[in-house]
Length: 485
Ligand code: NAP
Image (cartoon, rainbow, N blue to C red):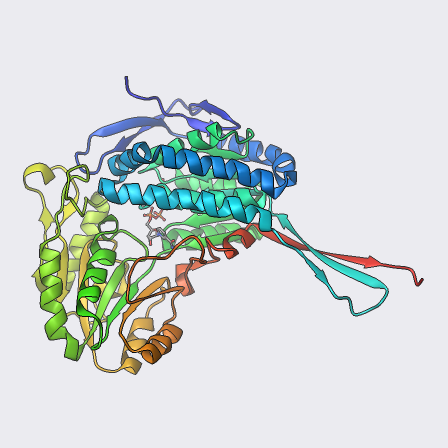
């Protein structure tokens, strides 16, 4: 019998008051995987109130105890890694091996913040007068509303929930309506880990702006932690302004991937293929969006890159050997198609790919061929916008000064990549690139221990590292006056 999925509010499972449900669709087959309750404002309010009720107990629990819950959740996630990965592949489409890695990485946030929960340090500050003493306490903010996207259905959830819980903040989570099952399975894990009722609540629903309206307006919600598009981030910021509600945003990107003439060719080709195509079919915020290859390197890099891209296997993520799955939905597919068509109409050449894949087993899915575009110019929309699909525009550059100016000429500032063997050049470029993350001679490897986040319109705040915990804490200064002895 098919599993019944429910909302998770105040430690209990239930449907939506409206009785409405919505379908979760497999992007490979377009089969309906499950019907899920369509939570609305009533459920969002109930969840916020449950979280508010949990604040006193959870915030006063010693960090050591909070960390133990997170450590149990980490363990349960590892034990259920394959089952969770199956859900991720089913609802998101990414290949199963990639989903397994995502689940292990997502679990790592529980591990990291289980330990960080014990390190909420304040300060004793030397006072300027002998008659006063100064302390700074770090206290949890209170209820956090978290809104997450579909491209990393597990990681985007744990990267918010884990630090909030470690800091002492109960959470209301609204995951993407395309991928709610992974989030609900994570709620099951937190429930089994023994989390007190109300500390985590999960409301899924298709009326995102109505749910967000409740979060933004409710006086008990102290922070909105959002990952998603820059467009929605800006709208949320405007909605949050009248209440001066705190916001943290992880938004879109437009990552430059730089291959200098002295780069290790094989590493650069593999890095570009990995970060462009092998992460959610190019639907990742840190995907390479524009490849800048030094002119004197282009004749070697481009043929090798085209060969690597031709060898990528696209298909159903449960089939062995598949490296790239489908796009999440028709709208994303159309956006990718139109960016490629526009570039070609303006003079770009298709090196490989360049069309939708719809034959045989791929006929029902939203598949797009891994594509490389040559003779591209910076002003083309394919370079200006976040592509969010398996398309790599290749451009060339001559000097580092020119490269820096072109790479930084975007409103985004999330991730960037440099390939060169020259260490002085690495430092000069890394310092000059206006991005929150710079990958050097490798395109993967960002991890729990470091802060992650964007500059400019790519976001506000950081997730991960010790800074990830600070995002959910408030400083309180205590000034003690002492009578003269
Ligand atoms: P999205 O459309 O902004 O949706 C993200 C989340 O916001 C979903 O839960 C969505 O709900 C909800 N949402 C949609 N409209 C809303 C509204 N008006 N008010 C409040 N919430 C709303 O983004 P997406 O297409 O899911 O994700 C792709 C974007 O996320 C890309 O731009 C990508 O770069 C960015 N991203 C950034 C990071 C990072 O760390 N910087 C990580 C991953 C993704 P529904 O699903 O119900 O529509």
